[in-house]
Length: 248
Image (cartoon, rainbow, N blue to C red; front, side):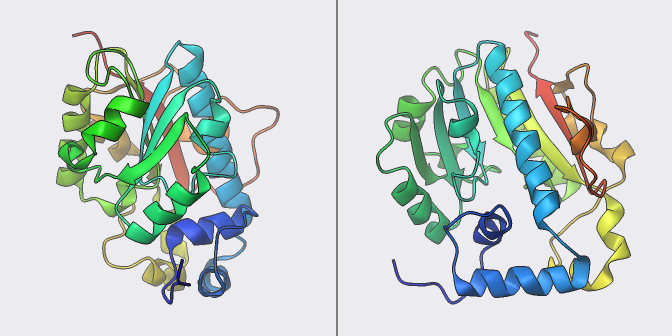
């Protein structure tokens, strides 16, 4: 693979998580963001820990296949590692990230990686969907939608989540997170996120889920969602939930 000349958020996160799938351009961008915000590794470790807890909770209900949007680099405790008995289809829209993910998963028969735009479920390769998420639309699956809500306006986000609700079978579960307005206190870091980045007050999160019904855990700061041990001491920049597609 030719070394990229532009940083990738997915590879920056891999750097913050202590992974090995990033390049100098990503490290430079990560350090520039930290100059404007502060240490990011604890925040992204908390996000990855939330992903693991959410995936394990979904798998514990009997769900054995997952469709992941905006997947980034599929390592450092990602979905197939959190639920080793499940099959997983990772998807992204960035071709460099997709190629990297395919290389990482080349030896796996339980996890695959392909193109997939969360805002258009029809873009997911049906062959990959059939292989790694068998029974999509007919039996419950896990849908992972982390790190995406902040880059969709309210209308697009609500429509996307409703389309996923219709496409998924009853009993399917959605793991999702939202960015709060915490980053507004760091204007230089906020500027680095670009014009598409959207922060929201916690009161806005529930209505955006539409027909997806949060579990009894609610929509809470990620460190407080079924914490294992004490809650992590990180800024309440992200809220998370697992929500269920009802039988109706």
